[in-house]
Length: 406
Ligand code: 7TS
Image 1 (cartoon, rainbow, N blue to C red):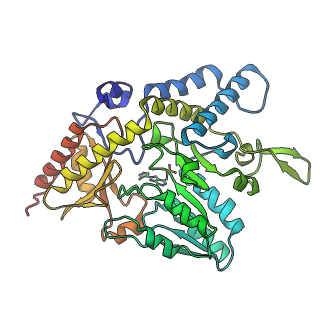
Image 2 (image 1 turned 120 degrees about the vertical axis):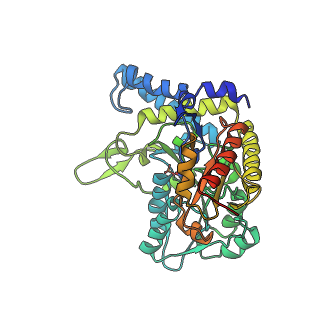
Image 3 (image 1 turned 90 degrees about the vertical axis):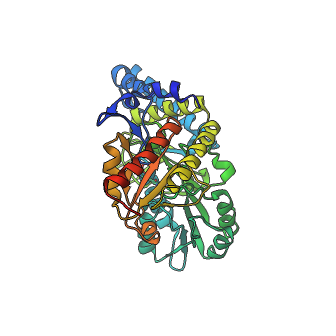
């Protein structure tokens, strides 16, 4: 990975923070944006800002074309069969809520089961709790092994003939665990359940093929993959989306309306009520162009190297606990014995190193890890091995600063 050249594409990375070159290691929260994405947003607002799918004036036509071209780029990026299966949303949270409401509540009933993993982000947990409460279905969990991985035999035992929905993250945003969602989908399908994949932490970092995974629904966010905030994708198999009622109704999503009834537009617009995030969608298309130019396989290979290096270096520091399996995505969550994660994060920030401290929207998982919170360093392809060395040194400095003696 030619990070020297790549980093010049990201204007924010050139700055100093607290007198030190910025070391941005909070990519699981949100990624930075290359100049090409920033330029796409500026060009939209400067040159052809218009609403889509409405007027026939020139700017509106250009905006509509670019908005739909971006959808095609995203379709190709995850290998969906059709752009009808690519719904623009606000992000992963919005996509998962749409599935839990539009599909879950409509299809679940008393006695049915929803099965999820113990490492879900709240976005793939609370909507299922709510769907279970609203329908009388029960919520069940796969067991998780001590190293933070799932065992397919456990998965097979947990999914039953009563299971209607299985929802699982492809990559844990805390442990970095890469879950075998393709195999889980196969087991779910054997039992007649639909498979929902939370792709928030996988889509930015590895090649995704929704047909190969055989996911029924797949959700991700633009802002974690070089795109703007406020835009994300809900992928769903066309037959499932066709059978779903729109979650929101109003403008844009209709075919014919009279004073007492209405009919819906075709997919994907049926699911996109109101003026969408036009700049965001076009910006996400531009982010996809940038990622394709680097290559998703090259990105995942390089980040695996970063993840391994960070895991080895950080877990070698005495008094430090690293959570999650050895084989992991490009992130490392840890605690230093006796020092609060927020203090660690503040000490690292003083050296220009941005990490996240907290429960990372996975409170039940942290309870399971027997800690209230962790420090998380998460990488992207513009990060370097030198930055991981700085992180390691920063952790050792923090230990010393807080007078940690072991
Ligand atoms: N699912 C997973 C696995 C996530 O990591 C996140 C965000 C979401 C869903 C929700 O995505 P959103 O774009 O709708 O907010 N995770 C994080 C995180 O780990 N730190 O900040 C946001």
